[in-house]
Image 1 (cartoon, helix red, strand yellow):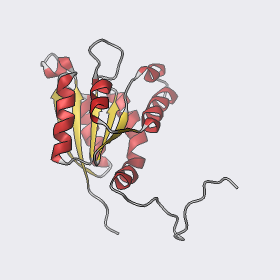
Image 2 (spheres, rainbow, N blue to C red):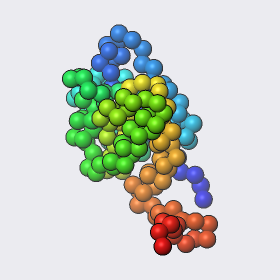
Image 3 (cartoon, rainbow, N blue to C red):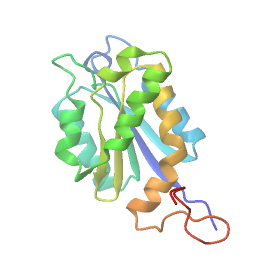
Length: 175
């Protein structure tokens, strides 16, 4: 069976990076990690947080990306609006991804990871995932996302659940 090519877009939501106050560091790390996970990657697109995030997400849907991963805008400051903009676009939320992202950061010794308000969900046939705006948060997040990305994209596109080598459905381990 041929490996599925995943078309990905990286969006960095940062008012200061978009204004040129400092260079985006998390977006390039995220793009590299998505490439390492087998994706064809565009971006990072560096944009201000808020309405431009919603517009960029809608443009990504129209362009037919399989996955859009954002970095930044998930914190508690008044300007951190990426989760709200993402919720305007997604049709179905996937809370398990966001929960796993926060748990992984906390398990890796970053207690403030639980303060990330990032969300994940599906819009049309596109998976959208919010990651924190730090390189560490991006690395922790991709360690969670990379192993499930292909399966998630397959499911979004109507694929069957993964089966064991025998062809029988995988056991849940519950008798």
